Structure formats: structure tokens, C-alpha cells
Length: 248
Image 1 (cartoon, helix red, strand yellow):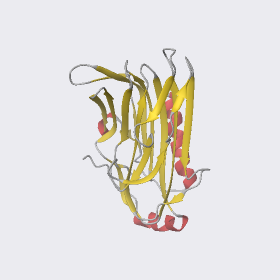
Image 2 (tube, helix red, strand yellow):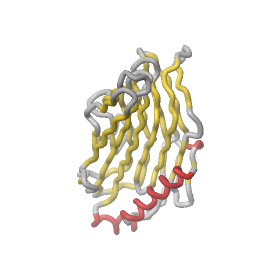
Image 3 (cartoon, helix red, strand yellow):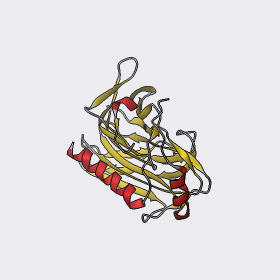
Image 4 (tube, one colour):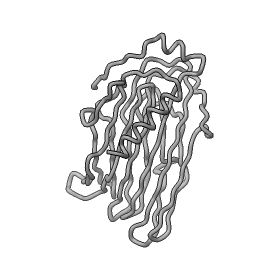
């Protein structure tokens, strides 16, 4: 609970620092989805909007209450989701955290957020950051690698993978020696700056896709932030960002 409150406080502080007005999150029903695949067999864990809560400012919080084992339809143990959380600040920010363990074979993971929708931001700027750690548990080293061209994707104007790409991060594998840990991080555009998106946006989502070596553990954390350009703050306030929670 202490860590959860600390993360929540940091997210709210970030919003305050950006000077953005608070709004209610318009979030899809499936807020956090993890899929694990081993040798062609897959299984999933899905957190629903009712598993989390909205605070009195309309921001959404979900935390995994206990570790979950992921099984295929025929009962094959695929992976374990040890910890996970999702914070959605309605102005808008999507922040995800997770900790997973692979099965006795290399395991492909995908971790996706729900779709956050909001009134149109006509002149948006954004930034994204992602960090990972991989730990070897059985003495043969550990590898965390992209399942495709990158591990983390942030998208707008659509639910991943059908949205428009904003930033694809962590394109290189992260490795660790025997009984050791390795880490990597990436951000766009970097240095705490924002990049022009170049077109109006009305929604955003984020996802992780990676392969983890057998028996090993990986954790990830990511944040995707969108705000109006400084000139657009006044117009955004006039628009009255009061959007009620919608369950789709």
C-alpha cells in the first residue's frame, strides 16, 4: 500500500507540474491485459475497470492484489504475473508497471493498457519513457529481447496495435549474467522534453511486447504523457474537460 500511494502521489505531482486541468478518465473496460505464449500455446490475464477505482478527481488506479499464474487452455503453465499496476491520469497520462516470470521455456509476453479517450486536443505534444530489468534465476544467464522491433510502444488515436505510433522504445536486448540482473531504459524525445505530435488526438494506449528467457524474471515500467502546447492550455480549459467514465 505504501508503494502504491507513493506512485500515485508522483503521478499527481507530475500532472500538477504540467499545469493541466483535472478531468475524469474515459477508459475502456479491459484496463490491463497480459498474454503469455510458450511453444504456440497462449493464455491471458485481464484486469477490468471494476477491479480498480477512480479517485475524486477522476483518475484511475489499479494494482494486482496477488500473484497470478497464467495457463493455456489445456492446462500448461505459461508464466507468472507477480506484480502489476496501472495509473491513468485523465489529462492524459498512462503509466504501467509489471513483474513477470517465464516458464521452463522462452516465453513471449504482451502487456497492454486499456484505451484512454478524451476531448480532442488540437495541438498536442507528448513524451514517453520505458525501463526494464531482467534477472537470472537458474545460473545460465538471462535475456529480455523485443518480440519484433521494440519492447515498448505508445500510440494515439486508437487502441494498440491499431493506433498511430508515437514512440517505439527499447529496440535492443537486455541481458544479465549468471544470478545477476541487467537493466535498460529509453525515452522519447529525451531529456524531459516534449515532441510535437502534429495532428489532433482523442485517445491513447500503450503496450509491451517481449521474449523472456526460461525461468527468468523481468520487470518493466513506462509512462506516456500527452498535453496541449502551451498556447493550447487556455482553449483546453474553456472546453471543460469533464468526461464521465464509460464502460465499453
